[in-house]
Image 1 (cartoon, rainbow, N blue to C red):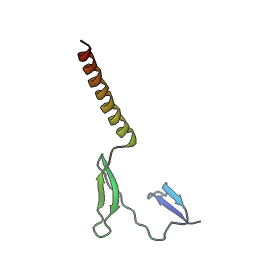
Image 2: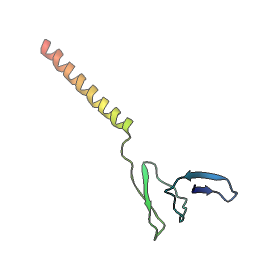
Image 3: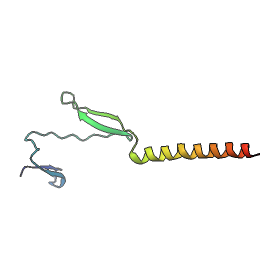
Image 4: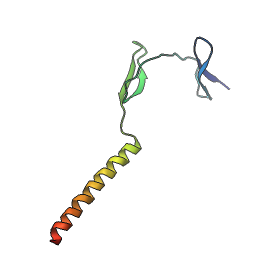
Length: 85
């Protein structure tokens, strides 16, 4: 089975992958990626890494939704207390 092996100058493996989808032509780049960015691709002409802003994770979406619902409950509770007076 074809295996892709990424290794350093000392021969230490950093990454391996097996599968039928592995091609015979790969390149490698080391780049600093900003926090909050995710890699889209690499421009093969310039060698520049193309990134985009990371969207919120599923957990972050749920936390935001929870905060909105909590705020709504507080608002409705306050309205009910005002109406009860």
